[in-house]
Image (cartoon, rainbow, N blue to C red; front, side, top):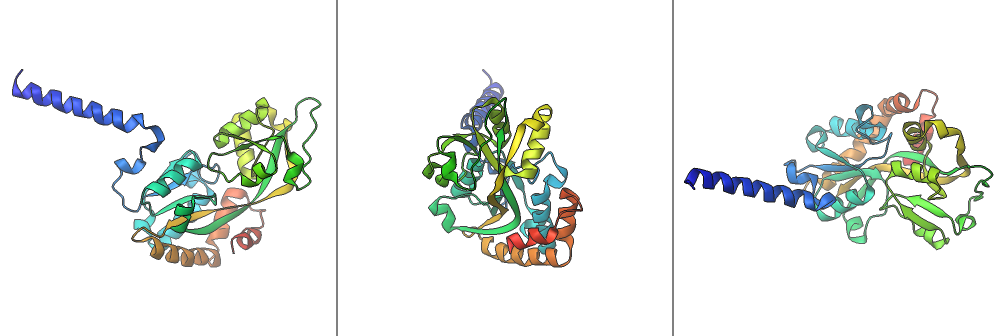
Length: 278
């Protein structure tokens, strides 16, 4: 074998080994392995607020990018990798050195929480949803989780479900889009999310069954969405301070309200959304 062919063979073997190593570990292979941006950020897919399928990657992403751009943070927006689950976002925040993560305000580990600066950008009402099939009795929780003891709640992996477990509720994990399907199949009894998210997923996956999904009252609480800066990043604390200032400017100049109306409609009460994050 000539020197030339030996070299080609060695290069081919190295490529195969690298590819196998990069794919075999699944979600543990960091997107930043292939990205050199030191100000990389990770976001959780949560349609229609964070999604590659939506205009400007969704309402939350447009609000955050508007502040980042206005304040010149992270190279005027930085690189944002949108990941499918909370657990993946949590993993990269805990194990790597991203500038920030963008997501609902979920529970981080104690170690990760010590380096986190969470800034709420969007406050949403959260509701429980059930699937009404035949003569099945509609769930009546009356605002108390203990009334749902023995039922199964569909949760995102990484979601804080301690209160549900304490109330004797069973937990089954799945990605957000799959939860609606599992609810319809009877594998879980109820799920919880903002109304806009449920309506979006229902329209995408089960439009013909829309009338059989029931929104349970009263509200299940509030869900805050925003950006969590990394204190341990060289620019984390400075970026967090600049972002807080920029968010106030976005609200005061009316751009925040305009973006809300663009995504949610002109009849929404923008002032209510602003109160939820102040």
